[in-house]
Length: 175
Image (tube, rainbow, N blue to C red; front, side, top):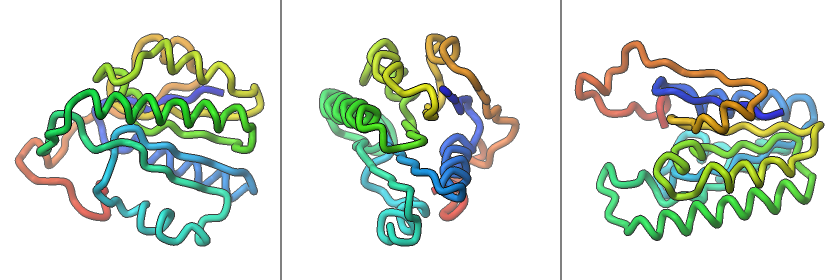
């Protein structure tokens, strides 16, 4: 089953993490590969990456180099492209291993929107997922091709956000 969490509103990664928790709670295995988020630490990193023994059955792999072209990013676009391509190859390898019940490709919609990888490349990889497994694609700007291929699509719609009033992201709520 292909699931997409997209839209401008907050909650896409959070929803995917919640789905992973539900999977693990049922004795299943879940993997999250992050395509954009990079060196800065989120709350989930401290629980899952620093203490993986706390979450048996769940693994989080940060493969992005940070936000592209914003928030002080000075890396050449080619570096971001290499990281995204490498993350997609890693996802393909993990799909072929068939050991995960759920694979989350976090911020992959953004990676395609930013032309780091193509929607066709992504669809080629996720088509290899066995029918009894689940895959979640997160991020703003999900390509129409993803939406068309999906079994379930949820759009997080921003109605109001403090960032629009100049309030920066809050620790423990947004990262």
